[in-house]
Amino acid sequence: MHYYYMDATYILVLIGALLCMAASAGVKTTYNKYSKVRSMSGMTGAEVAARILNQNCISDVSIANVSGDLTDNFDPRNKTVNLSDAVYGRSSVAAIAVAAHECGHVMQHENGYLPLKIRSAILPAANIGSKAGVPIIILGIILGITPFANLGILIFSLAVLFQFVTLPVEFDASKRALVMLEEYGILAHEEIDGSRKVLRAAALTYVASAASAVLQLLRFVILANGNNRRRD
Image (cartoon, rainbow, N blue to C red; front, side):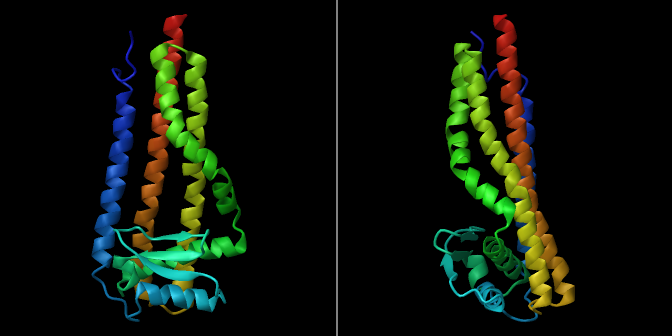
């Protein structure tokens, strides 16, 4: 019997893992560097978020403090900008950049940003794809049932698609953040470069995740096709 995990395609998984590790290390290093740089305005992440929301006349979005490291997010379901401990009460360039980024997502939601709508629409299918796709693929390959494996690949592709749709959403949120930080005078011109580096490093983690997902998908396609050729 051929075991799906005993093959040279593991190199693809390894490459994906290394990309994600490098991106994660990069964002932590960059964030740690600029988390030590206090902004000239002295505003905390929470104050920056409040300022941006107020500047855009958005009164139905709340700001909350959540635990964890880099767990910041905007939840459109309850309209809450969740800021981690390292962002909520800190006045560093890094904290301000992250807070503004999450407000960038708020602005996307308010403006009906198309990629965000698409991402929200495919999220349920992507969740199914990430949870059910791989087990179906593995079972199909082990049992030698190529159509079953191909079904799993199709389902898993939805999760990969979600990763790619996420890219323009994250890049656009960062772009909006940088514009607002400078336009509203929250950061001085010379501080914008630091915030840009923080957001760029964070964006690269999404790029690495998308690349890793594609490599994993490619591996499964190779395995399924190889299994089919052996049966022939």
